[in-house]
Image 1 (cartoon, rainbow, N blue to C red):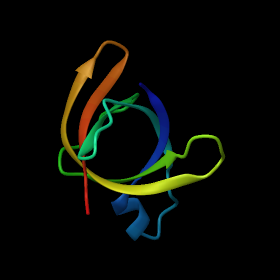
Image 2: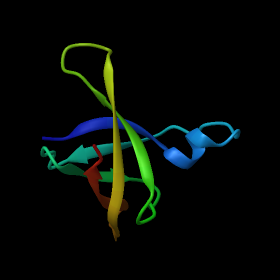
Image 3: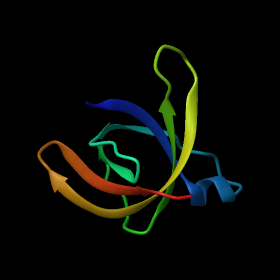
Image 4: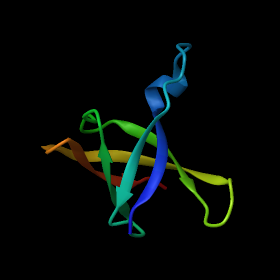
Length: 85
């Protein structure tokens, strides 16, 4: 199952600069993390705040995650993210 999610870098959240919200497609979602397909590469160790939509409505849940790995694929990039408690 794939799910469109918005995300932003935690470093952008902490700075006074304007926030850049991007989007990607989450796949292989488990209780420990997910795979995120994006147009731009994510940096290993980067902390992201994901906005995961709840089924049946416009509400989303913010989830903190860390990028464990990124690899280039045809037409974009795939990254492994671990959820943070």
